[in-house]
Length: 305
Image (cartoon, rainbow, N blue to C red; front, side, top):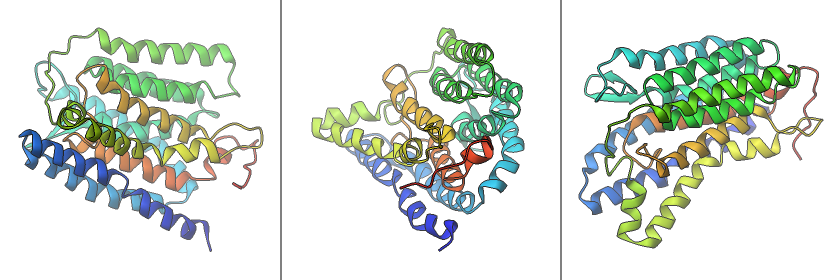
């Protein structure tokens, strides 16, 4: 059995992980009197995202890395293009596609993290510029939720560029974190939409047990990245960097709604986080065991036990 064939069953069940959160979100919205029709965009995004994740997951790690640079730059530029749209109350986080507003950063960040990861050991300056650039976009939008999640994830990558002097790594991480967290200082007048940013509170208000189930359903979204951060070990014991950064990113996006009015990924109505989660899962499926070796050719991967 080839590695690609071995990955197919695992990827198939991983693609179903967002379903409980989406169904629960729609149910909570219905019971709370919120428009259930708003969740049709989640279902559409899930169908599209699953297909794209399956396509990406079939790529070899070499092919994925060859296209990672251009795709990461395109993803960053698409996120920056939100600044050209009218926005809402001077907040510019969305690309307008007719009646649909797509949260661009939620879709783009997995690709940017892939590009940063690939450039980490050979072109650290390029990786730093890419991370700083997207952090600056988040501050300009402003989007403190995505800015915080991306800054934390990108910093975990930059800090692990062991071929780069520690002072340079520390400086890059500091700049990324400073700019990313700086988005919290920008005015953000947008109010929370109950079935988007407050879906967890709605679930808990219906029944405490339902709130617990909702948290568990969101926890399923961490599974694709969690095995990557623990199982794919290099010979010197380091965890696989890209999977770790994606785990940090997804975990942070799940936490920031508790700190401000930010969308609850997948469970809240909105296509961007759904597409972004599927992009991250497809990237992880394609990179699986060999990405660490491609990123740092001096290290040989250990076969998972």
